[in-house]
Structures are given as structure tokens and as C-alpha cells.
Length: 107
Length: 135
Length: 140
Image (cartoon, rainbow over all chains, first blue to last red; front, side):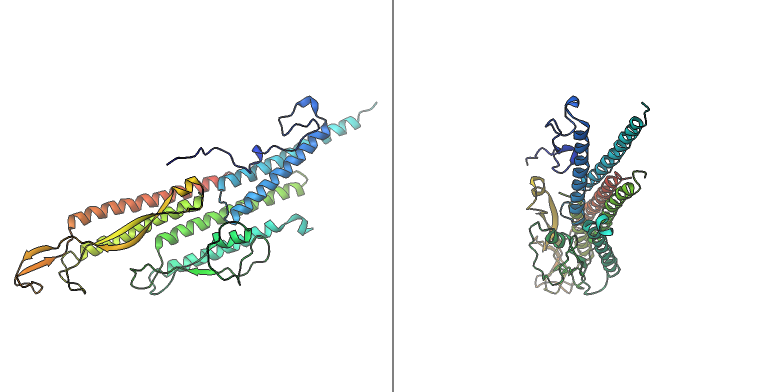
């Protein structure tokens, strides 16, 4: 019996998905830091949240319907979505804080 | 606004939980009737029904579609309950196999727990956002 | 291959072992039954196990995973034991009584392996269930 190479090639895991292009045209977190504006990175981040949410929804639906009962994969996808969301909100808060400080600087 | 926050997947998951609950009660009834003559073990056929609803999978089952379950997409109707025929060498016509029922109990409970976890995580994410990022 | 299939396969193992135990019980109980409804002595019952591919339409791994089913409870075609006892009601014209082709010692050993097999499958079910629950613990 030939056992295929069962690697972690889960199509739906957000961590393996190459996401939207930033301003520089590169993808995901593997972009060159100096080539991207803040806006590009924010947009990128939003896409990542969206993608991770979609993936986790899809996986959960497939789990619930019994079509693809991948318990650990689904749980991991859900947790990734959760963490991505919380991270993004945390970053938003930091950005806002920074913005507030700049605005409130007396000239 | 409730429609915006709680999508079809949310109600679909709720329907699946209902189904799992029904399966659980069928299983306990089967176990109670382990010695009843001519009692046939009853169960809900999840894989085929829900695969059909999801629109994928090879549906080899010959069943009437009048009471077709459309769980994750729309309204839920009563699921069709299947009966297990007894093995040829069984004398009293009872088709309840304790092993099968016990494992069905476990696997059903597992799926119930998985869907509950998934649903609660989704809700906790919405709650997090609703609280403007504060837990 | 999903975790539910794993559970079902173990369940099939447990069921098959129980059918085997029923056959063994029947054999032991009828070890000295010199007549049955068919007229001849009791023939040893042998459950026939068959490995059936659980999900032939699945992946490569799925095609190699089988559950077990009892396809038939066959009657052993071994010769009966002949014992000379003309006084016995079931003796034939020459005075020989045919006793069932059941060897009690063989049945006892069979029963031990059946019990171990049942235990092993139950263990597999428990382990599978625990693994799945561990996976669920990923969330909180």
C-alpha cells in the first residue's frame, strides 16, 4: 500500500493563503516593509481578517453538515480568525492612539 | 439588524444542533428497546441528507424527498428517520446492536460539541466587535 | 477519512466480535447435541468475517481502510465424532452415535481471543473519542 505524503496542505487554512497585494504588489506578511504605505498595510490587514472569517465560516459549515468532518482543522481555523480579529482591533487602537497624540501636539 | 449580525450559517448551525438532539433521543430509545422483539433500530441519516443540502457528495440513497431537510440554507422540516433491518440470523426481529448504538451516541455527542464550540466562537467574535474591542 | 468513520470502523469490530461470541456460546452449549431439527448432530457454527472498504469513493487512504462485517454464520463441514454406544437413542444401525464436531478447548481459546478483540476495539473507540475531544479543546 502506497501511503501518500500527508502534509499540512489544507487548502482552506488562512495561514497558507496568499492574500491580497499591498501597494507594492507583494502579498501577505512577506512584503518589504519600506515599500508599503500605512494605508496599504491597513487594507491588507482587513483583507486578512475577511479571509480568515470566510475560511472559518466555510470550514464550520462543512463540519456541521458532515461533509468534511475535520475537527482540529476547523477549530484551528476558528481560532485563527479570532486571533486575527483581535490583533487587528488592537492595531487599530494603537494607530488611533498614535493619531490622537499627533493631533494633540501643541505646535 | 439581527439579520445583519446573525446570518444563515448561525441559524443553520442551530438547526444542526436540533437534529443532533433528535438523533440522541432516537439512540436512547433504541438502547431502551434492546430486547424488544421486532423493534428496528432507528436513526437519522446525516451524511446523505446534509450532503444533499450542501449540494455536494455522491448521493446513492434512494429516498423520498417530500420531507427533505434543507438545514443550512433554509427552513428545517422533520428529518426522515431510517430503520435498520435485522441481520438474517436474528430470531426475535430486533435489530438493535448495543455497540453500534453506543458508538453512535459518542459520535453524535462529539458532533454536537463541535458545532456548539464553533457557534460559541463565532458568537464570541461578534460580541468582541460589538463591545468595540473590549472582550 | 474523518474521525466519525474511525468510530464506525471500531464499532463494526465490536459488533463482529460479539457475533463471534454468540457463535462460541452456541457451540459450547450444544457440544453434546446429537440431534437438531435437520436430523443430523449439531454442526459447529463459524462466523465468516469480511473486510469491506468503508469509503471506496474517498481518498487514497480511505480506499485502504476497511470495516469488518459478518457475512455469514457458516456450519463447519468437519466430520462428526463417532462414538460406539448402541444404547444411545440416536445410535445408527451399527451402534455408532455421532457427536458434534465441537472441540470445547478450541472454543475456550476462541472465547479468550474474542474477548481481547472486543476490549481492543472498545479501547480504540475510547482513544478516538478522547483525541477528538482534545481537538475541541483548541478553542478555550
